Image (cartoon, rainbow, N blue to C red; front, side):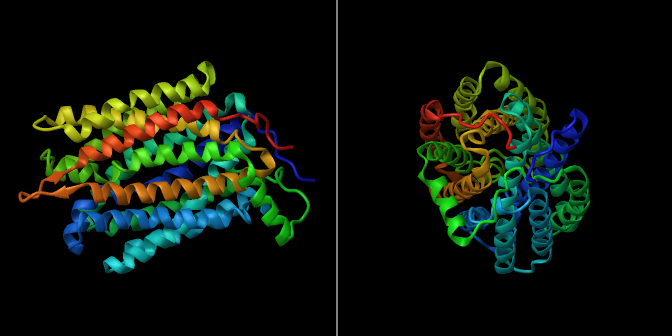
Length: 408
C-alpha cells in the first residue's frame, strides 16, 4: 500500500540535512561557473554574452529535462529517482572537469543541466511530501541553507582549487564529493510511495500533466517562481565580472564575496524560515522582497568604494535575494495537491530554469564594455529586477494554499 512514513524528529532532521547536502552539490555545480567568468572568457577568447550562453546552457537544459520529467516523475518512488538523477549529475560534472575545449564544456554543461534540472525539483518535492505545512518554512530554511554553504565553502574552495590546478579541478572535486553524498542519501532518505496510485498508462500520464496545466493557481505559483529567478539571474552571473573590472577586486579577493555572503545567509536562511512560520509566509516574502531592492539597485552603481563597502552590498544582496526563496518555495510547494506535486514541481523547476537562462542571456545583452574594458549598462539589470519584484509582491497575494498535509 502506498504510504509516506512518519519520521521521528531525529530521522527528519537527518533527512533534511542530507537533502541540503544534495542541494549543496547541485548549487555548487551551477554556481562555480559564475566566478570563473573572467578566467573562462580569457582562456577561450569568448565575449561576456557568450559566457552568459555558457551559464544559460545549464539552466535551459534543466528546463527542458524538467518539462519532460512532468510525464514520469510521479510514477516512481522518490528516493530511487533521486539517486539515479544524482548519479547522472556527478558523471556529467566529471565530464565538465575533463572538457578540453569550449564546445565540449558546453556539451557537458548541457548534460549536467539535464540531470540537475529535475534534481532540484525532486528535493523540494520530498520536503513537501514529508513535512507538514505548518513546519515547512523551517524545513525549507534548512534545505535552502545549502545555498549558504555553497557560497561559504563550495565556491571559495572551488576557486582555491582553480587557482592551484586550473579551472578543471573544481568540477573533478565536486564529482568526488558527490559520491559521498550519494551514499548518505541512500541511507538517510526514506522510501516514499505516498504519491503513487494505480499504474499509469501513457494516456493517464498525459491526463496527469493536463490536470497540472489546467489549474490557474498553479500558474500563479509558476509565475512567482519565474519572477524570483529572473530578478536574480539577470544580475548574479555578472557580479564577478563587474566587481573585478569596474571595482578593482583581485582574483584573490573575489572568494570573499561568496565567503562573507555565504556565512551571513547560513544564519539568515533558517531565520527567514522560522519567521515565515510565525508571521505568515506571504507577509514575510513581501518584506524580504522589498528589502532586497536596496542592494539590487545599489550594486550596479558602486564606484570608488573599498573592499569593505563592496562586501556590505554583496552580502546584503545574497542575504535578501536568496532569502525570498525560503517563504516563496514554502508557498509554491503548497499550491498543489500532494498526488500531483512531483509533476507540478518538475514543471515549476523547468520554468524556473527557463527564466534563469533567459535572464542570464538578457543580462549579458544589457551589458557591454567601453574602450577601457569597463562594464557598461549593468544598472539596467537592476531595473529589470525592480520590475520583477513589483510583480512578485503583487502576485504572491493571489496564490492559494491548497495542500497543508502530507500524502497518505
